[in-house]
Length: 328
Image 1 (cartoon, rainbow, N blue to C red):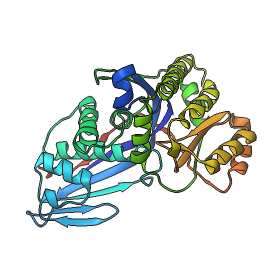
Image 2 (cartoon, rainbow, N blue to C red):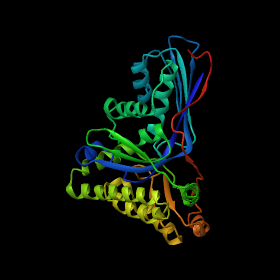
Image 3 (cartoon, one colour):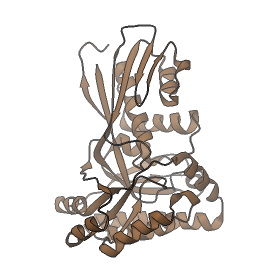
Image 4 (tube, helix red, strand yellow):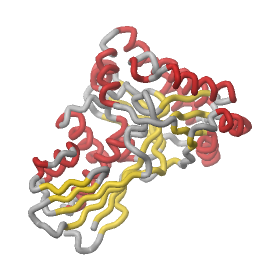
């Protein structure tokens, strides 16, 4: 048996600039961190050597790769020409909640299959292959930030060049600054799941408009500013910059927000949150806030109907956490 895991991510500023329709013309950048919440995948030899057993939210027992319903499993297993295995997927957090779960799944699955074949793969190549699977082979209208975050892990500034190359720059701060950032980030589950593909498709199309593109360029500027402030150990700058980023982001596509989400956000701001944003493409899932320590209680009270998710930042990225000696 082999077990791999890949972390979920929390994006601060610049989301959307990792879409090809934008970065190929303007270049893009995102500042994000991964958290210690993971997607886990296991693989071992199946009793039936001519079949494939898959266990996720459903259970499939397929006679061939092309018969698999789950499109990510179908694509990856077809690419690797693997049969006679049983693969199980479990996660700390449900899919469709804004934490990049699809890419975490793809990264963990590719890592699993390479390891099963006895192959080493670098983090950069792992992220690149995950992008190829999702964007090129499956035609998903998604960006690149989630795949690179899941592969590399950590608090990083990602730059998406028009050529397609992705530059990864770790954010270096004092230990007490990392702790302060972790302590002052609060995340609440608003409920529901969203269709990231539908929202991102609309957003990608909208970025062809000059005004929408101008707003996305400004979001990139905010990401660069936040990087500089973090490097100066000014983590409190996150509050206002998150707020400015959210004000811009929610204008990029219709499905990103709605009056109810706006109302939740205002409740948190009135209670003392310096700023925040809905994570992921929008529409549902988790909302992140930067809250000064003396206002934590007030914000919790204002959002008491929602489940708070306590988390720590992850630095490991995609990892192999178990390999049985008889896996080959």
